[in-house]
Image (cartoon, rainbow, N blue to C red; front, side):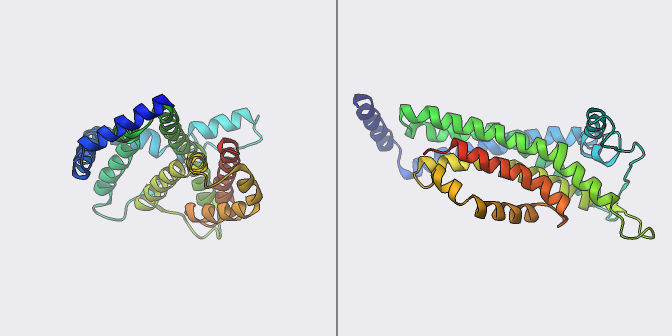
Length: 267
């Protein structure tokens, strides 16, 4: 109790030292530092992008992609991913390669900057927290960062490769030849990776809402059937096509995240 009173006094003193405009100034400098770090990392990713593009971003376009090879080996050949699978990405716009180089470098830099962004946000809100709140908020920031990268990783290793492979191998007519445009490929790639990273914050969001007293375990269990329908709709929105295979690749992880959310929220 005494600790709480002392902390409240410290918070009042802190609030007294900093006006509303002072808080905005602190936030402004935090945003400036984030922008500087983002620019520096973008320069690095821009220089490394030709290698990253060949070795990682375009990797799912061939049968040599290590995920295809590993799953075929683990399944004992039940899952057959032919080595002759190869999709050529074409460019039909004069400036497309240049702008793709820039946009992809910026997108990758943004993903890599997430821990620093979290750190700056932590520094900004830390003085306003009580000691007993610091532990929970630190856990939330750390957990949110880990879940974001986990979502990006699952999108890169599973969701995008198999969605891309399914759609490129689907044949309406033998007379139709698929030619995948660079802008279409990279647009779907970046969108799926970023969106999956964001939706993997679902357990963290549920935990925060439960701390605010807005949701409970019983609430999530009671409306699970409605949530499943909502997750299916969200999966259809996230996936670049409306085919059931792509939707299931997204819907299954989303459902598991919903179950995880039930575990982390308060009673």
